[in-house]
Amino acid sequence: MGDAINGAAIVNGGDITLTATSQLLQAFDHAAITIQAADVTAAGALQATATANGGTTVNFVAAVASADVQASIDILGSSNVTSTGVMTLASTATAAASATGALPGSFSLPADASAAVTTVTSVARVHIGDSSNVSTTGGGSELSLAATNTVTSDATANAAVGGSTAVGASVAVNIVNVTTIASIDGAAQVNAAGALSLSGTSSTVLNTNASASAGGAAGASSGPDSSSVTAKYLNDAAYTPYESTSDGAVSATGALTIADLTSATSASMSSSNQATAGGLLSLASSAINSSASVADGGSAKSSVGIGAALAIDLAHVSNDATLSQNVQSVGLSVTALNPGTLAQNAFTAQATSGAGGTDVGVAGSLATNLLDSESVAQISPNVSVIAGGRRHDSV
Image 1 (cartoon, helix red, strand yellow):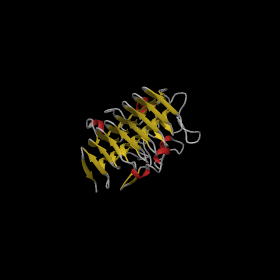
Image 2 (cartoon, rainbow, N blue to C red):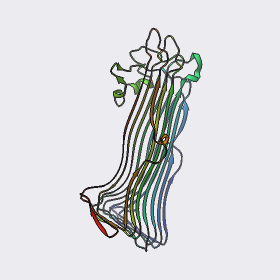
Image 3 (tube, rainbow, N blue to C red):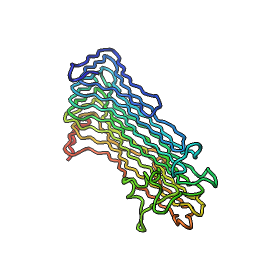
C-alpha cells in the first residue's frame, strides 16, 4: 500500500480491516501486509492481520519435505497510520513439514536403505520502522503488535521394518529456522492513547529418527558411498565438528540423525524517538522449543554390515525482550519467558549401536547434544523511562 515514488496512498474509513492470508498448505506460503509511505486513518478500530499456513508431507524412499512460511506486517517509510479505536497488528505463521523415508520398492537409493530430509523456514513479523508515525487517539485505545509462530517438523527414516533382507544406511535430517519478531525501530513515532504492547510468541517441535536396516550400511569402514544421502550430511562441514571424540571421527554409520534448530523470538523497541502510552507499556517474548535426535543402529545384525549410530542435536535459541528507546507510560513490563513443561523445552540426542561386521568392524555409537540458549529481558543503558509519573534512567 503506497510507495515512495508515485506518492502516498490515502485510506480513510470507520473501522478498517486489512487482511492477508495464504493457507495453501504447500511448500511456499507467504502472506504480507506492507504500508509504505501511505496515510491510513480509521475513525474506529484498525485491524491488520497476516496469516500463513504451509508445509508438505512426503512419504518416499528418498523423502524431502519442506516449508517456507512467512506472515508479515510492515509499516515503513513516512507512513501515517492512525485510529480512534483499538489498533491491532497481528501476524501468525504456522509451518508443518513431515518426511518419512519409505523402503525401496520400484525405486531405490544408491547406498541408503532409507532417507528423510526436512527443511523449514518460518517467519512471523510485525514491524514499525523508518520514519513512520503510528498512533491511537481515542480515550484508552490500545495499540498492539503481536507475532506468533508455530512449527512442527518431523523426519523419520526407518529401515528396520524392512526385515532381515534390508541393507543400507538410514539417515534422517531436520533443519529448521524460525524467526518471530515484534519490533519498533528506525525513527518511528508510536503513541498509544491506552496500553501499548509488543509480543513475540513461538512454539517449535523437532522430531528426528533413524533406524538402521538389518543388514546395516554397506561399504567400507573408510566411509559411505559418495553418492549417498548419508555421505552428503556426514561430510557436511557444518556437522563434522560434532562427529568425533578423542578416539577419532565417525566415518561410517548404519543410522544417522541430524536435528539443526535455529530459533529467534523477540519483542523490541529501539526507535530514536520517544514512544508514549496512556496505559501499560509491555514487551513480552515467549518461546517453547524442543528437539529430539534419535539414531538407532540396534536392528543391524549382519556379519558384514555397519551398525554404528550417530545422533546430532544442535539448537541455537534466543528469546529476548529489549527496550532500547525512551518511553513514557503509566506502567512498564518487560518479560522473556520459557513457558510449558520440561518435556516441551527438552533437547535430546540418543544413539544406540548395532552389530559391526567382522570384516568391516564398525560399530559403536556417538550422540552429540549442543544447546546454545538465552532468555533475556532487559532495558538497555542510557534509556529514559517515565512510568507511572516517575522517571527511571538506565545506566
